[in-house]
Image (cartoon, rainbow, N blue to C red; front, side):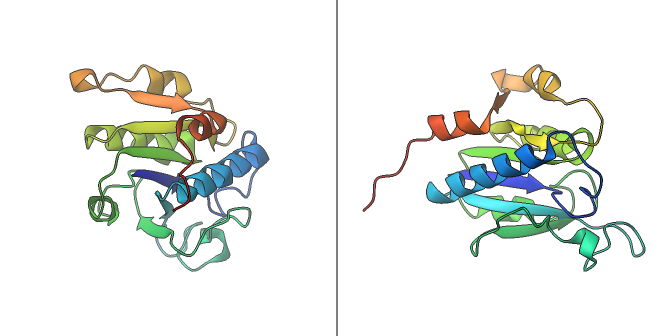
Length: 175
């Protein structure tokens, strides 16, 4: 099963315009719809700040960005660090099914997305990153770095566009 992690696409994170923001949000929604159609799992990761912080749970800034299209069966995980695995329920959610590929996208490429990509790889997952499904505020992207990330046992991080994801995952035939 494919699992899509959508990291930190929250109103407070996107209050300033990010690189290709509208297209990235559209690509994330397209990928999420595709994963659901393939009977995969979509997990939204939300960052929690301490009380009084920009992303304090329950505040408008903490909420998912209104352009996202979550579905009824999607999951949510709350985190307090850049690593979506650290002290969260993510590992337990992923253990509930056999994960073939962990597909990662979201906001703040150079912090939470990057840290989660590296953590997922060290947890032994096959990691795919949507190269057109992550963004950051006026900072360089990490596609080159992830492509050349040194991992043991010949493992690697694969980058693909949203269109490539749709092309490499065959459509399921109706029952």
